[in-house]
Image (tube, rainbow, N blue to C red):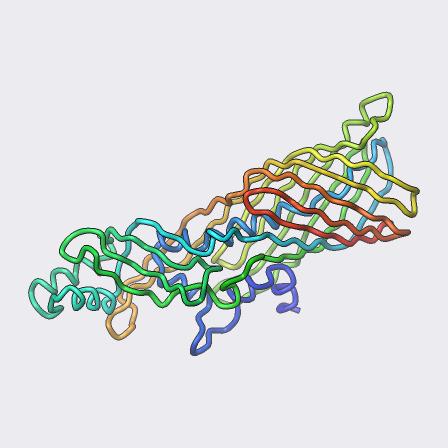
Length: 354
């Protein structure tokens, strides 16, 4: 049951985080242990944006009815998928980096400096000093980039300026070279009270591992049809909505999203068989909090220093326009839509209507 819920909702992402480390494959947390904050931000940025885009999608497929009191219950699930822009596969940035003993010695040897000399020992101490990180240029694959595009850290200043070291990090596991991040979640809606409908998403808390902690997810939204306040019915159904969610993947990620906007729909057909085209516009926001330990190692690979790294990633999507179609057949409703934003996405839902 634990594996089902993890893979069902977070699919490739959570599976990659929680699968056991193998001889040739690290977990995502172990991969991040090699990266300082500047590199890790760029490395994870596409996942943060795509995850936020997914979570903020699929909330509506029609406006609630403009009735004072009614009973309308839908139980089902929604699937979402956000497309990665081509430029999200590679990054180039300037920042700071603390080298491991092995990496520092490699740089010194490249520059023709004996690590055992007085000068070499001084430079070795500077490069590996966690309190005095070096100015560097960092480039390479993001988490969804090519598995052969290794991250390169190049010194920018000093005697070692221009020297570079390759990190054993590229596109991560099954996320490397992917074009879309798919997600899925159960969803149910209930209404209507004075033209207002409530929608919920929830999964039970599941223990991931002793180190990571628990996976948890909860979200809810409200839609209100302002037509309830007008004497004559409007030619189309309108709704204003607000949606918020919180997702935690152990101690590694916490993602919070909010969105608000307006949607319009028009039912064509009868009660048991009808088509409903719909469209909407959302202002949205998604923030991912990341926390992990950055481990500096000696020439034998043993940890000599550990820094707790925490930072926040803000998703690139700030708004979206949605267009879709909903089909009701007896007690079932099927809908699909496409969302236009910085990260384009699609959503589809299947609901049982009571």
